[in-house]
Image (cartoon, rainbow, N blue to C red; front, side, top):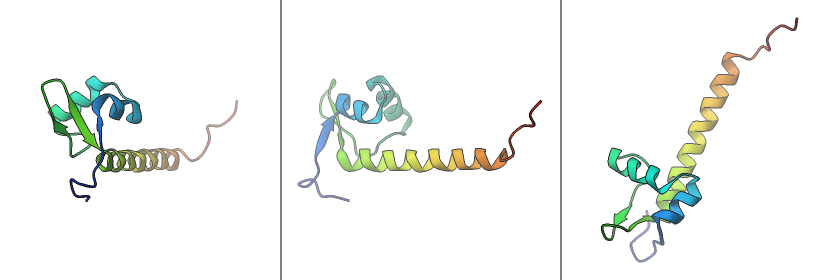
Length: 83
């Protein structure tokens, strides 16, 4: 993990854009303890995310998506019979 001096932060609007979600989704994830780690609330209306937290979260989501699709394809590996 990076030290505070090396960490670059992005606003929640930029984080949402990078993740392809709405800022409200990020807020819900924060309330649930899900989503990218390391966020900091600077004021009542501004929250920032460390770039390392976004990268880590995107990698985790990518791996979960790959595993889900792999299992789904393996379960139904034979195509349905043609009529």
